[in-house]
Image (cartoon, rainbow, N blue to C red; front, top):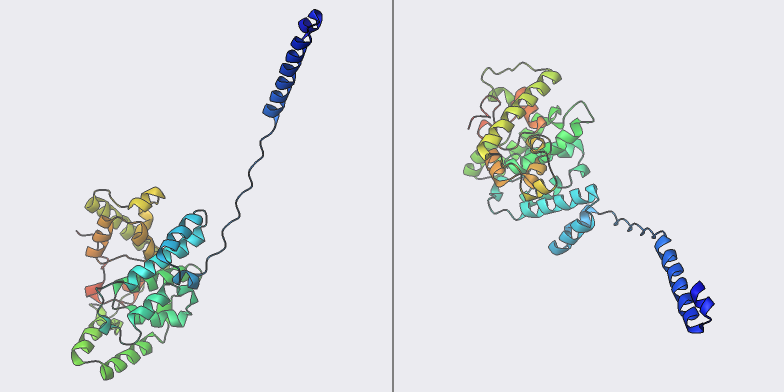
Length: 298
């Protein structure tokens, strides 16, 4: 710039001035703090009933939109589970004489709407199918976290069983009644070798359940050669240990085919509520349960 002024050349002066201005503008642009983009608005909360009316492709879209919404994803997973169970073809619907299979599926996929009494009734009617039973027991597990008693300890349980047996005897064919009678819960005294079983303490039950779950996890790991998670479970970094207890739906959502096959061949998922009922009341027909003393054998 100074040299251009010394020469008195107006063209050089204009050129030099243009370069100075461009340099100043460049410095200004580079020194500006970039504007932080505004966070997108969180998606609207999901409604369980509205999800039942949502098309399959829209459920996939909602799943992506709610990637940071754990509750929303739980509701979507639950709706997927409901649809899959409603489409099952392995169900003998004659074995659900009191409440239809379809109604039980809908109720057990919104279990928080059930009172303790309703949950007990639904559990009784769902007892003939292990998958439905697991859904009921998962909700029982959840309620046991905040209260000391389970719906299974309802003193009116035996009366509810008797009502079902009487109704079934009057309304079902002899063949269907015999099948139904063999699956519904009956007098616990007839389910134990000695007729009476000492009632363990809560701590003893929890210690036994923890030991049982550990042994079963090791057996599952060996049986599946370590393939315990499906693709979704691996992507979400799910702890495979957590699938052996707690919520039965999690193992269906994140467990590998090998793990689901292992569980199915050894009696199904074992929630703490189910384990407690077996150890204290003998409430499960032996053909449909996984007994504590032989569960881990493969």
